[in-house]
Length: 202
View 1 (cartoon, rainbow, N blue to C red):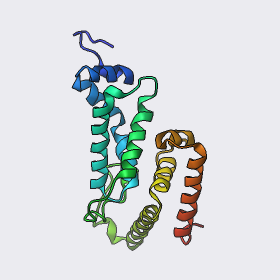
View 2: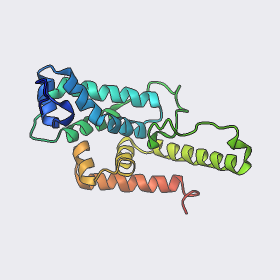
View 3: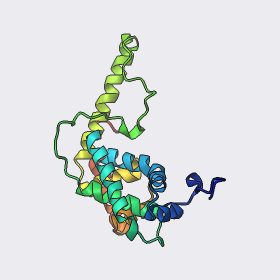
View 4: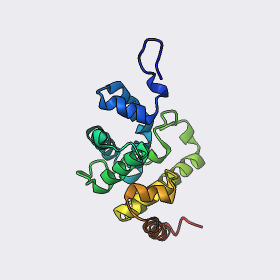
């Protein structure tokens, strides 16, 4: 993975190689490692909490823990499994310090897409368009409220399964519990979501 200048080509390095370089003090290697997974971590965090600021706090805490614990990471297991386990632990232990951001953006599940229009007065001249946008916002708010009514572990399992597409066995590894327990959390979460949104689900 070396370049012509003798410097390692970090873009093609494996996670293990980046970890070893990071342990030796190569901060560029650690930054590359972070960049490979930062969007996934932020997406998980954003799908778990109401506030975008809280999601950023979780994101920062996760990679701070990764940096501090990298020397103790056992290379026998996958780095991604260890990383997402830290992410779920931080999410589950997170306590929202303020409700100032309770009206944070509801479109975090779609990612930070700056190309999406956030307000076009000309388009709103069309009453049907305005009505549809209002209905979509109401549905998003209802879904968000339903998610927040779940217990921490139910919400985490539901988010990882339906928003991140993680397999049940992967979620079990992240939460350090049995696959059966994950199925139970998912069943309970789904039942609660259906009940809360029964007038929207046909």
